[in-house]
Structures are given as structure tokens and as C-alpha cells.
Amino acid sequence: MKIAFATTDGVNVDEHFGRAGMFAVYELTKGGYKFIELRKFADGRDIAVEETKGMGQAHDDRVQSKVDKLADCKIVYLMEIGGPSAARLARKGIMPIKVKEVVSIEESMQKLMETARTSPPIWLKKAMNNT
Image 1 (cartoon, helix red, strand yellow):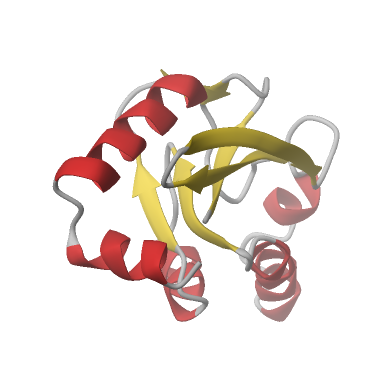
Image 2 (cartoon, helix red, strand yellow; image 1 turned 180 degrees about the vertical axis):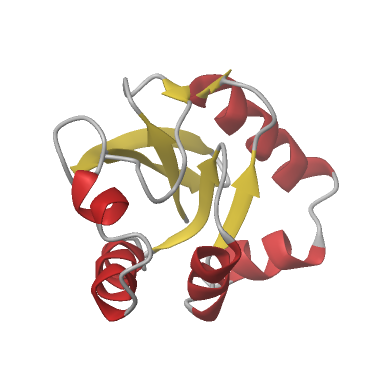
């Protein structure tokens, strides 16, 4: 199962979904996890998404493109996400997980792996079984 992390540095979950210029993608298996790739949408912040906010279809298209490029992931960790973007992820079967403060990707993966092993919520069991 692939997990994406909204990040500015490839090390921490520290970005809002829409303005994230890159996502670190990891693979979680029953035996562990490993880094797969950095998916870049922009150098730095994703200005194309930010500048179209409030512009209707142009903004929707930019956000949908980002969602589509993360469609193979089952979970996306992020600092913030708007309701419409969260709904777009959910329609693709992707669970957005908001973190309250900056946290390392490594720590997030370890916690997720432990939860998957000990007491996974129903949505996580389903995601793990569909991979």
C-alpha cells in the first residue's frame, strides 16, 4: 500500500495539500516500509494551485490533477486540507490524515505500521487488503 506525505523537505509532514510542491511516497507492507519516490508538482510551493484559488474550474482542474497523480496512494498525510479537496481524495479511495504539528515522515510510518499490526481501523484494514 502506498502512502504520500505533503512535505517541503522530504523528511517531515509540514505542508498543506493544495500548496504542497511535493509528496514523499512510501510503500507499506506487512513486513515493513520503504521510500519509493518524491513526486514533484512544483519547485517550492505549488503556485499554480494557489494562484487559481477562487477561480472556479481552473482551480478545480489543478487540484484534480494533483489528486489524480496521487491516485495509487491509499493515505495522504498533510497539515491542512480544504473540504472539497478532502472529498476529491475520498472519492478516489484515499484517506487524508491531518497532523496537528510538524512530524517526521519516519515517525508517521512507524506509528502507521504499529497501528496496522495491532488495532487497525476498518478503513485501514480494507486499504491493506486491497493492495
